[in-house]
Image (cartoon, rainbow, N blue to C red; front, side):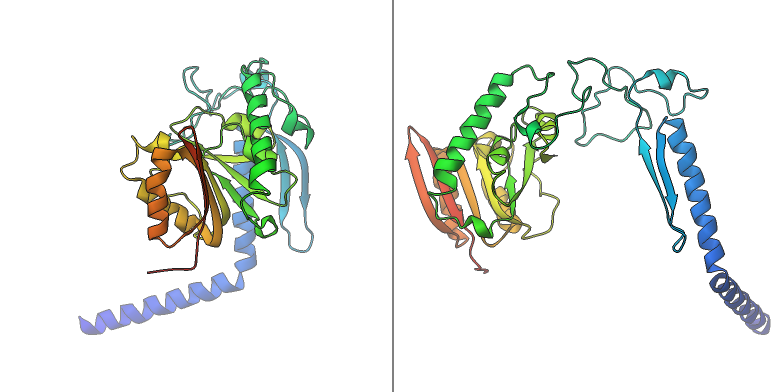
Length: 310
């Protein structure tokens, strides 16, 4: 039995070695076959969802191909499909739902009325930043929000807090509403991540229509990014909104500490009763409190992270 097992083992080893040599010698052919089947599958898929090929080019040296697709502009073409696969989503399914929502293999209908966001192309940058979409019902709130943050940024943030903005590149607005804070920083050489908390009204479509970048997030959980990714964090009345949702504010402050690089800044605006314990937490983590101000039970706290570690 041992002799037979030895022979079988040797034969299998020889077989695998031969297969490895065959694969190595024909790796180029195998790569081409994989690419062929991949592009064939992609072509069938994009055809089934009615995407139009605008351009197709293959590099002669690397043989890498590139296709540019365009999504249809109306729903009429979906009805002309011989096979309704993937099907259209049901009318009661919200196309904007994107937080902890399972992905489905159905197509949402294309917005067709002016009251729906995405029905029209926005203005070009930077005009789109100050051009408010027709589907927005409360344009006055957006205009007021823009003017509010422009005034605060120009009169306070840029000049009155001791922040060297030449060292600021990556900024996060932890409770962005319409992206007013990010819009106020367009003259600075910064990039702003606008975070729309999942417990707040869904204003992310407005942020994207203005040409800004944003995501949804639940601040009772950690934020999906590398440590020390940001130079400045801005939180306007975030903690007062989360006091009944998250167990302890210290967990959010610790997450802020993870997100900020050493020497990074945090600007917190909230009720005084919220800011007082936050200041104590920041001091316990050896942050430097650079400025505090309070009026009519509302306050602002500006702090800078240090290089301290326990």
